[in-house]
Amino acid sequence: MGASKEDMRSTRTRRACKRALLDLMRETDFQGITVTDIASRAEISRVTFYRHYPTTADVLADIAKDVMDEYAERRRGIVYPDASLRTGVEQRCLLFYSHFADHAEYYSAMLGRHGIPSFERELQDMRVSLFCGRYSFRPARGQSEAAARLRFRLLANYVVYAQLGLAKFWLMEGCETDVHTVAKVAADFTYTLLSDQSTLVISENER
Image 1 (tube, rainbow, N blue to C red):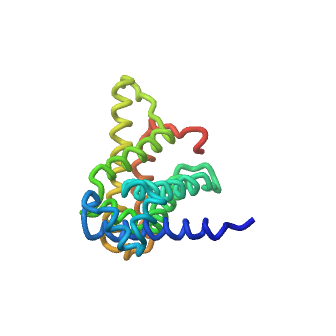
Image 2: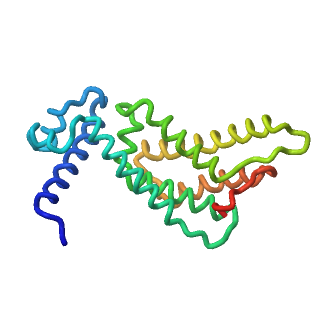
Image 3: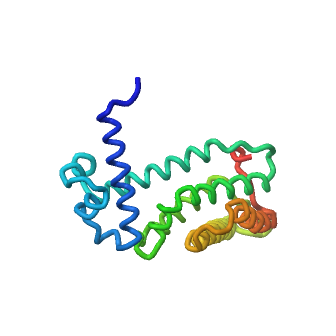
């Protein structure tokens, strides 16, 4: 059974509110955006807005959920033609930068000068967590467990910050370079760094 007219109207209204908020975040800080601002930009009444969202923060949370759900779905859909480290790095870099390109408006708004200050760190923390679930470190000969853990933590943050920094630079430059070129550069650098780590262990479920 298809969606009802009421469901379709609700979907259109939510989409208009989300679009309006992202547009406004290119012009002013999120904290300064009001329900009236969003309703006016979306060409709806405040009453209509409140039928769909309690606050402006709920609009932003809805956008974030859409974006992160889509990224999680893409991650689940990765198919590796072989089990090599290079293949895994290349596939993940292509997925990551393709995702950024497809959601450039969201990431530009969130990472731009009017964005949410805590967002970049939260994104970094999420990607570090993914990295740590994918790889681990075993102590080198004569190295303590504590030293190995510290080295791995530094490696994880270095890789994640570098990849995200490149994505941010690419976005702010208007994504002029094609996504495959950006992903290949990131993958080449990442693979060179990871393949040089003799104590790096790839998790079985990521092979």
